[in-house]
Length: 261
Image 1 (cartoon, one colour):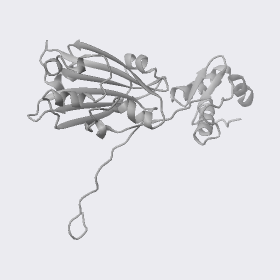
Image 2 (cartoon, rainbow, N blue to C red):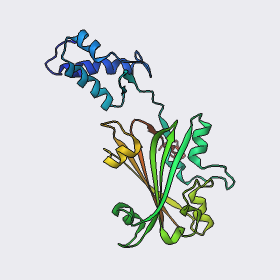
Image 3 (cartoon, rainbow, N blue to C red):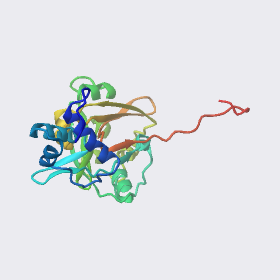
Image 4 (cartoon, rainbow, N blue to C red):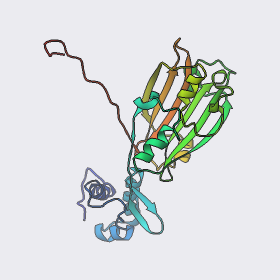
């Protein structure tokens, strides 16, 4: 039975105990947690208290409710997400895109849904693409899955004149990558700007990515530019915080002749 602490409520103490068991491996992925009835008997608490303690861990993404079977430790293998790979060159004869290739080689089961439409882009995108009101963009909306679970969304916006009559307009996988398609049509990207911030998801993102309550998301916005500084694309990646590790590879610091920085 948990001790009655003045600084933390009973439900918080029960949640602390269960959380510690999950984090130290005493409860492994897939293991069933004590039921509400178990917690009521063990801690001599009301049903609402037991239920609220379990709900706290659900909200943290540590456990899932599978009614009527109970609560289970979430089996989550995070995906390594490397922003710096965005402008990597993909072979022209590649059988599938980078995400499908890399995750397949990692032993995962990748898939994606693709929808293409012509839209008046949201203000945050129009600003980065330097589009005036009434000017249109092509958007490729993708949700990327691992093992049938939505892992992140990837929405790529392009000025309509840049991609008109290119494979980017078709709702199919572009095996050689959109960057190579742009280059093949005279729009070579020479640099990109990355913006990353963390926030709570919108209702649409919760539904689209099947997010548990309380799950924050990282937002990675990529703006790609041509040789004259003209914006060629703006990509919005929404990365659930419980499904990703963001990894940056950086070169070492240069040293002067004496070995000092």
